Length: 314
Image (cartoon, rainbow, N blue to C red; front, side, top):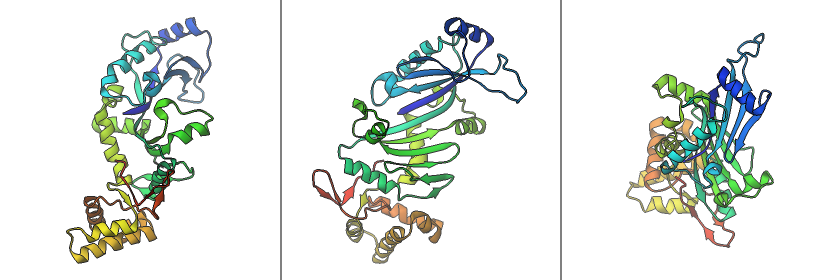
């Protein structure tokens, strides 16, 4: 459901005194409190360069790793009460309020796919790298071999190999991270604030931390980039198109559409075809379980098995 959270709590003068009694003097960005899955750092933000560090602009940033907090791979709606109770207990370290207002700064929704074969995990990443260079306000970044991201100033979509990500940090994957291909949708503070302004949805955890929100943001941010349909070789796609119910001329155009994407790019094809034609061909391929992003060649797995199709992740 959710991977990580960032929350903000604005400290009152009484809170500052309470913290100083426990921790002594502290500096900007100091990590004051830490436990499994939870970390709280203190920050001061000047509104103006000449402003003194009065007590009104100190705040706490809380970083929450739900996997570490719950010691399991994926949080579900059934875990919400436990999450809220742990956050409430943790907030007592720095807040005197009975119900401190924790402002949502960032939330990372995730889907984990257990894929034991290293070749197949990497194949999915390579295929996603062939998606749009630009979609809406998202810009693709393929600088890293083991991950691909599509980001703008308010959101990010990321796909990566968790095994390799941990090892690149010289750490071993935890049990629930082993062989995981992860897709994340990150909502940054700008998005959350704009969403509040445009829709009235208050920027608190209750409004975002749910499996329903996970589903909504994956449909909104990930599906248009990843597409429905299995990843297939050209030969396999053509066999399916030829055996479909479509007219002969439609079959020919669908195969030409796939060839054009393979020779150029998705963005080029989107500009070349009219909006309606592009959408119509994408929908037709989806109905046939064909992803417009194709396998260049058959894949040979680590077990030596030759495959010509990979199922869609979503």
